Length: 400
Image 1 (tube, helix red, strand yellow):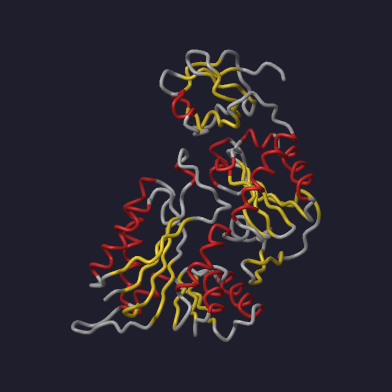
Image 2 (cartoon, helix red, strand yellow):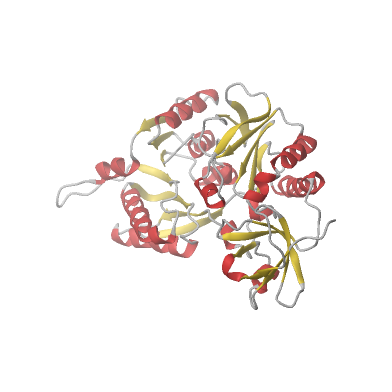
């Protein structure tokens, strides 16, 4: 391969890269040996000229280099095919039988700035780095070679593209796509609006947790808060719950959840309400002095969207998490199950559980932890890259 421009790192800056973290910030760069074009492939060396790997460079980004490989490799269509096949092998090992899943999870699969989701025979890609953007055609060709999909769609709408100097873009890249895509998750039927739905269409990171929660919340009256398209609700209804009531603010998502319940023969067990979840919980737990809230539910599921995208907003997010847990616990029967999730990277599992326990203290409830949840294995976690871990969850029984 041709000689690559070289970025030399400052003393001490190489340790993070050697440990496996792909991000190199501007403050870690000592100098470049020659002028480097944004988006170009460069080689990274420490201050003693020892090779650390190859990376995409972008002077406009806070992350000025994104390491792809510890060796000098050619980044071409064959490179992307190899990476995609390696990632696919991980999914087949840990999610055998799944037909819809995340194929590439950016840093988790050594392709920083690239996400690829598979919905049956349709692929959706999301690009958030300039280096990947400039090689989009290579990536699409690699996907066609590995999967031969019916369609490939781009949903690069993430706000963080602006930090790479990239505009938002979405649309059909290959094939044909007419209407929603029908998929199977754990034996249940869903429809995914890939061109117009939220993010790439569906939250695949809860695929394994749907079944795990349903094994715990499988009888009586269930409340599914922030239900979106009804993933948890449908799994619980199929597992044996008498009735599942879904709360969701999006009218479109509620309509989809109702259609999914009907398509799976579960409409008689599932009810859907378009409402602000905070307001609903507040109204159901408001009492006069000397009155008590009468618990109504055998299980409550809390799976809200992220309450914070930045560290600066963590305190506000924690207040929100505490409020929904406090009110949910007041509505939960003794012996009932609370399954709760947090998808903010800035709130780790220890902090999240501390907020749940603070809410339990205020509600005068004692909890027994019965399960710990994480993101599905198609969203791999690399401990050397803390940013790859964001979803955490717990299940508790109300001991008294």
